[in-house]
Image 1 (cartoon, rainbow, N blue to C red):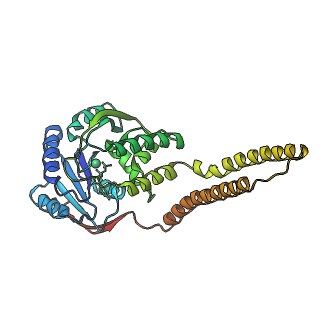
Image 2: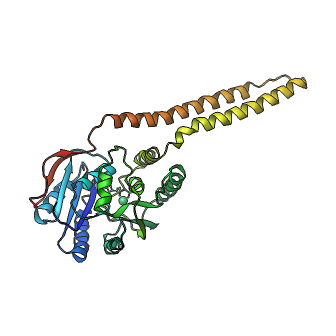
Image 3: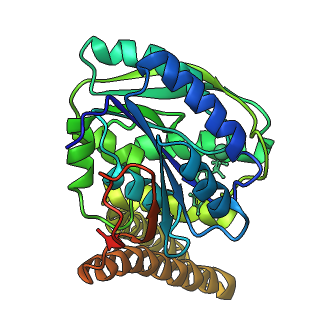
Length: 321
Ligand code: UDP
Ligand code: MG
């Protein structure tokens, strides 16, 4: 393996407006921190705009760039995984293409790693330029997640982080398709530290995480790290059992005192409640079963169509992992 001090990995999906700015800010911070010993792995996740063209052109004039083109849109977490498989540096710096996470925090993260950390992750204190809805759902999501899962996944933390080579190797060895990378990194353990920062607004373009993708992401996170939802059936069963006993007592008392039971409405409500609880539980089981089915196929996580780079030592064959 080539001795590179640092790899910067950036997944990009329809980010053509911001790539030049991203390139110049990362280049200057890397030069100031590690000199020439770095690479910038830009992963194009099946963009439909000029993202790939710009990346490819940049990679022809800057020898630090490794431009990776995926065969189609694989989603943020898989695009990032592709970048993590391709990179070769001793330390790996992950950030988004929209410059919401400032690359200028790199020197501070490097210092923390010099002190022996394996992972230094950015923890958001404030989020600028995001809708109240996004902030509220993100707030609720991280709190719900920490109640649901058994490992300690830090709150308000994205994928913005610096990781050691050994931590990335362990992450790369995890084969799951439904990836929630920040959780998988927490699962690894070792010494991980938070670096608080203010999250800026997007430099350009719009969020690539609409509500439907956020829901899917949240489901991946919860099902990937917890089987607690599967226990909902037992909990509901107990609750309904107790309610039935109480209802029975009520009916008996009424019977003893000679009151006849009219209750069509109560009967209908009970049937509906039971029916929806059963469907809900079936749905939860279906989520896990579906994921099990998808994993059982053992397909590669991503397909790389093309790699463009001036450096001859970079593997450029089309590949998959
Ligand atoms: N992204 C990607 N593939 C996708 C969606 C997003 O590679 O299918 C990238 C995107 O270009 C960005 C990062 O993932 O670099 C995070 O996306 P975004 O900034 O839209 O998410 P947000 O910050 O709004 O949660
Ligand atoms: Mg963003």
